[in-house]
Image (cartoon, rainbow, N blue to C red; front, side, top):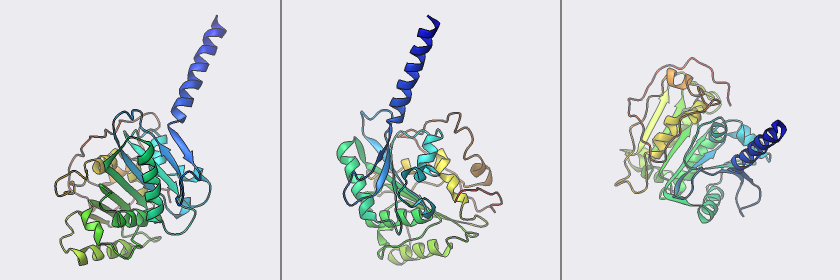
Length: 285
């Protein structure tokens, strides 16, 4: 009797693991003229759900999809950051991110899943920061909001960024990608529209290249993105949260043992942006 109960519990556990694991699926060669990618599905897809597109940095480039799990949104989800949304995490084999290839993946997901077309978000770091900027600049009418960490811009026309609620974060102590790269993006935006009405630019003294990676693990990051929709009148940018030492140190707290769900309709807590000196080390690149 005890053995039968144990077997039943083991079987139930295996079934639960299989169902849970099926929520994250690897796609290789699934979409023409696109990248291989991971797709995370929300627990309940009966109603249309938002989409987060995570674009990784140069260290994760290659042909091994498992590398994409090393840091970022996909890793945050696996560590317990619950997002009531789809997550697309493509892998770039090398070179600059191609906005069209990323869009081809998004269109495929939109064709086969119940997606909220008004809430498509892109975020990336380093090379992925360039990718997020380039994608948002190329498809400003499709991106509800974007975040770019320690990146820059590659496409010739960046004027479309003024139509997208955009948060750029770059540290002055970044030795891998100079903060001047983000400065150039902002300058291009200001040349097109001096008011840059939808831009938040945190140029943070003392922050290095790896430290912004912690932002991928904070619920506040996704809350800020989710507070935007293409349906918003005049598409205003939401007030940013404070990027403080204490907040960044807490980025991983509670994730492995479970975390609070980020709602598909949640709103961020508004606060003033921080310009504090960052002295801690992150260890992610």
